[in-house]
Image (cartoon, rainbow, N blue to C red; front, side, top):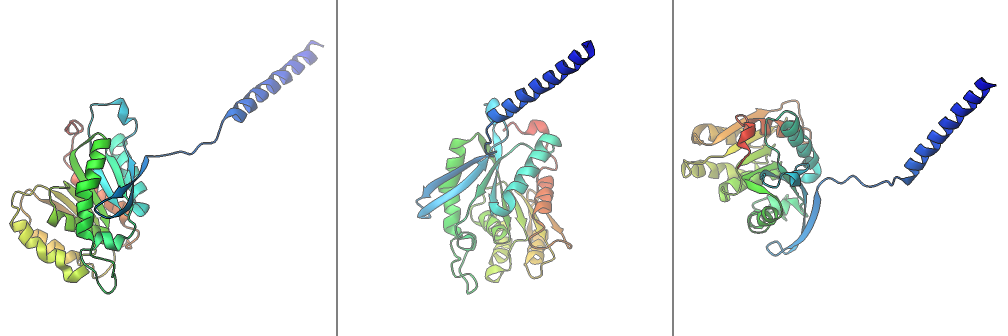
Length: 276
């Protein structure tokens, strides 16, 4: 009889536990897992509404005195979350680079934003100068006033975005400290950015920047003539590196390029350097 009562009690306990857990699960609500902030605002320079996605470091508000570098990502639909994963793994796990604020710049017309001039293939091109002024006069002040940034900025561009990053270097070199250019379309406009680079480097002997350039198995991107220019004219303070990913396509080399780019840029970085 005692054994029977004990078994009944055990079953009752199990039933009560199951009821308790089912009640707990019933009280839980499904919510979206949100990473970062989506910000939309009117640009007076571009005369249109623009959207950015900002992903600050995890729990950054717990350390109110810490300032962070910012990495600006063009074509965020392709490269924003790759950048997010790499930055967090390299900074939090491996501790080989600083924690960063990541800003994805959404483009309504990437050819208009990124290309310095129009062409038959891209008739809407030619807005790179206006887009650069938008970044300088509207976007950077917005990010700097809303988040704990320091003076260090990186830009990541792929294809036409990589061309724009080099255009930004040549035309407003004070904006960015480092550049990751993934399969940049340096062939565009009869290689105009390549032709301007020797004079730019000659006139900026004290330039202290870092640039990483990658190339996939694409032909005719104009990357090799650009590397020749860097080998000939780059001053000592201008750090650069190049990698040819022969087994990668134009669309597949982004992740590896971002990894290699950050490894090159922060090659000599130490944890206590992130105190600017």
